[in-house]
Image (cartoon, rainbow, N blue to C red; front, side, top):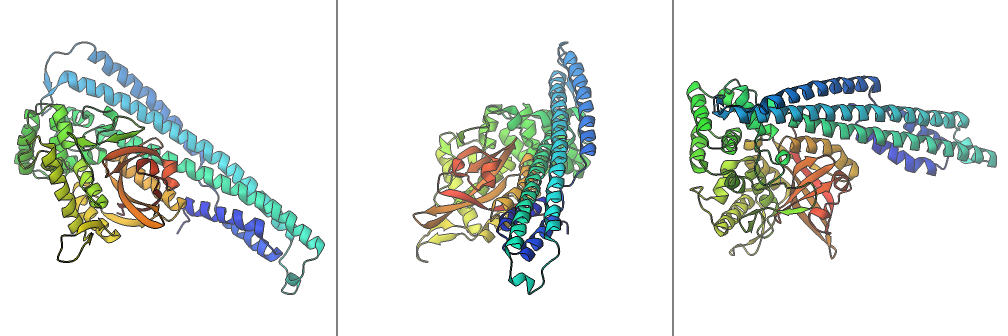
Length: 517
């Protein structure tokens, strides 16, 4: 099995520590051989550069499309309808204009990512070659290995030669380590950005012939009100793909019913939430029942009742509330509370049951808080969480173990995201760095990722469960079941420090629960 970039990086970091301490000629030779045995940074800079240039040519074509669509939009279209679901032609043209703009941005971003990766790989490979040359020079200067008796004694000349070779070898392995770090970081940044741009190329995600291109375009374009539209799209990339597959599986009669529901919806946001319910795994009958509860509601109502997390900025901490009550945990239920909110983010039918009650029409934040607490406690029991108190008393939740967290993630999230969840320990920065690409891909597609953080208070261990729910550039959006979302840097995550999203007790990110398929 090929060695991962993280493993290469870790091996070279270890050799950077051990080579300067080598106390014998044979020991130094062994360490130099190990350093030379680590693979060089991979990749063809010329090919990557060529791909970047190809993306740039697409930018101009997408820009021309944007200009042409913009000219149509400025002509003042009549109030005519398009598509199967009654879309205003003027709205469709505006959506097409935004889609063309996003397409140009995606190609531009992809070109930048590939060009930056090509430059980084070229520099890293050159630096790695210089490091290899130094290591070979050090090895040559030492000559062959000493025999058993020779290795017992080292005269002044032999010691001086070993120390000189050790210095050269230390410089060489440091060059190789720096090259490995640069190439690894550049590859992860490129993967992060390319995954993000791929997820944001939204118009082609819903692959179904049961809706027209206009309908699919409008659904992909629709965002909640009250936040940055690009960060609050109702249908995630994963939703669009799942909705398309679900539409393809419908019978002709069910497909016609779904189109009628969409056509009768009063706003683009209402249509998008109907499709989100279908994407979450509900039948057309269940979507129809849900549609009856939300029909005619304005976009602000839909956002408050169906979206537990609204993103208004890429910095700072934001409170997430329904009315004046927080989407927060009650007692020591951080894991089930995070899972409840994550499910509400991907399952609007579930979200409405919490906010609007059985009828979907309640407007009572206190009643919402009671339902939310009950649901948190239900998941606590579902995951066999621990309780404090004697067996004849009603105990208070005191936490949940790793097995329970995997269990409730698979029961509560998997049916609505399509993922399955397994636990992965993160014991150090390299472990966190290694899983970051998978995390970025998941959240870019709209699938929350559970993680655990830990620390000490007065010498006692404390643990906490939170969710990664967003990704933008080099930042991660963390939902804390204390009722807040916070943007933190990927560097802080790698270092294990999420205190900005919690408090100073939690300085170690130690476990992630992510799709293992």
